[in-house]
Image (tube, rainbow, N blue to C red; front, side, top):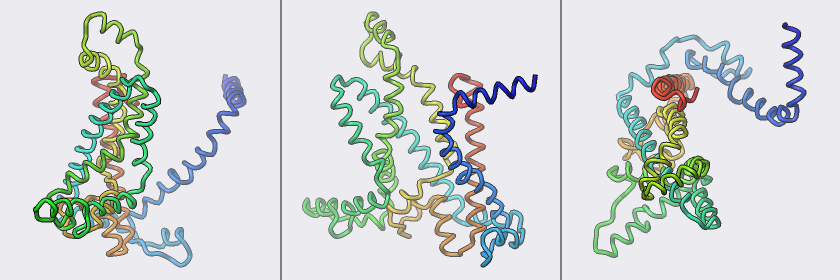
Length: 314
């Protein structure tokens, strides 16, 4: 029996050799850049000091300190602030991105001019490929205290200009708008593909029953894309403890006056690393993010599997 199974395995390898060869570079890339670096998480439990003999020697010779490095995050007076900001922003981003991506996908699916659909999709995708550094400079052109477009408009209308980079009032709204604007195109294409894959006979039956366009969307389109929504929701919840460093660092220009509303786990870790140079503490905070994210992903998937097994990720 074992020989037969082994032969069958190698037969399948030979049969799908072209596909395996195509996937091999990506597989090797994942091994070297995702799985092997996982073992470096041991740095989080050491008083890490760089040795002139290289990283491996540094790892071996550094002293074990257990969970001492994790105190950097939990003992800080800002621990509650950065945790609250990280979770709150990600929950709001998740809700707004879900709503606008589905709405945009449904609108695109209703357009009959396919050339226009391609134009709109291309235009909505362009921000996704822009770096937050570039977007940060674009935003500064609007919010610059002395020459910004918004302040020029305010002064021309007899109103007082706003010092956007010292006033934290508007920044939660700015982050939400910029995040939705940048990710709308990519997220909507995924839902657009799901909407376009719905069997047209469902809509034909709904029209025969006299359903309006809104009723078709509510009773046909939304239920059909729920499995895709749940899969993306599970994946996004897994990253709820990770903030977009590029956005939170570059848009407010790392301005200390805005830390109350712009400081999140990722920027806090970066600022702590640049201030202290302690790699062990920063690694501990990053490991904490990964562990909590994995637990949230598994927990969310478990709940979804109990409620709707077909919508679970695994």
